Structures are given as C-alpha cells and as structure tokens.
Image (cartoon, rainbow over all chains, first blue to last red; front, side, top):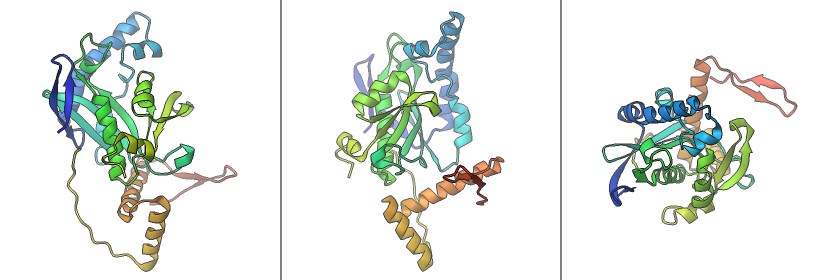
Length: 208
Length: 71
C-alpha cells in the first residue's frame, strides 16, 4: 500500500496513485494549488525580486507550468502518461511523462526511455514556501513511478528529465542519476538520465 | 503502482511485416508489443501535429531538409 509521511502529525497516511490526472485534480490545482503560488510570485514581483534564484529559494519555480492547459491539451494523446497522487482528501502531487523520447547518455544513446516532463507537489507540502509543510516524499513516489513505468514499457528503467535548480540534489543524490550538464534548449536546466543499472539499484525487487 | 485495463488484439501480418517487427524488436531490445505500442504513439503524435498545420521534416547530413508526407 502506498503511503505518504505527514510531517505535521508525524504519521504515515494511506495514499492513492491515480492512473491519470482527472478533472478533480485539475480543480484542486486551479482552486488550491495555484492561488498561493501566484500570490508568492506576485509578492516577489512587487518587491522587485522576481528572479530565477528567488523563485527557487521560495520553491515556486514551477508556478508558470500551466498544468490545467496541458492536461486539457494532452488528454487522449498516447505519447503522454500522467498520474495524480492523492492523500488526505486532496491531490498532493502530479506527474506528466512522455513515452516517445530517446536517451542522450552515450552508453544508452537513442534507446527508449520515459521522459519526466513535469512533476510537482502541492504548495502546502513545500519547505520554504510554507513554514510547516504537510506531506513529504511526494516527488520521490512520482519519479519512482516513472521508473516503474519505464520497466513496464520494456525500457529497462531508463528515465530522463530536466531538473529545476531546487530539485537537482534529489536527482543527483537520492536517485543517483547521471547529469549531462545544462541544456541550452531547455533554459539551461541540468539534464539527468537514469540507466537500467541505476534503476535496478534503486528498485532491486522490480528491475530485471 | 496503478493499473490500467488492457485489451487483446489478434494481429495478422505478412512474412515481411513480421520480419520487420522481429528485426525492430531485436534492434531496440523491445518486445513486439512494445514496438507496436511505440509505433501507434508516434503515428498519433505525427497525425495530431499535422492536423494542427505543422510539418514534419527530415534533415540530411548535408543539412538539406525534406518534408515528410507521412499520413
């Protein structure tokens, strides 16, 4: 059973991973996720400090991602897969994956992989944005699900992603992914890739 | 992990088509089902973008571009 750690109550709570982002998740996004994120962006704008460093510092670097429009545009497209992670009666995390991208890392060049296009946690779970964040481990569960999807697709656990600056240590240290450096085609965000060996080390019970 | 309902399709292929599927499956280290799934994803992706008025080009090593009239 999937669980999330409630940092406030210091307990594990049952969570549900939904097979694709559904209308109720978009409602949560529009009504409960975006207002506090946009308020912080507006606060930074008014203070004249709306910079990449500041949005990273306040953990709102993904505020411009337009999740609702992307959900609407990508529905029914086979190249896209998505999940919503729900817990405590609300949507706690979202992920969009692309299934037709290919690897860049020399040892797996042009092999199929799952590309993690977008992954976000609800604003009330974010350290720095809120003083007492609620659930921990949302990003870990969602990116792990991308690895599992890669295994299910026959891609042997290969995944790739561009990391926002605030998440680089997660992919480098927790997921042990290879960093291929900044990508000029993607705002100079660092590009990371996972090999089948790294996936097997992370998920020894499921990887081949 | 989430589960998605799947349906079974019986597919009739010519020898040549099966040879190509075998070859792609081997080259890409994917099952035949995975190759066909990728093919369907790509077909739909190209189709959607062409319906939106976009064009698909291949660029040769000498940087010559040729529009691919696929679908």
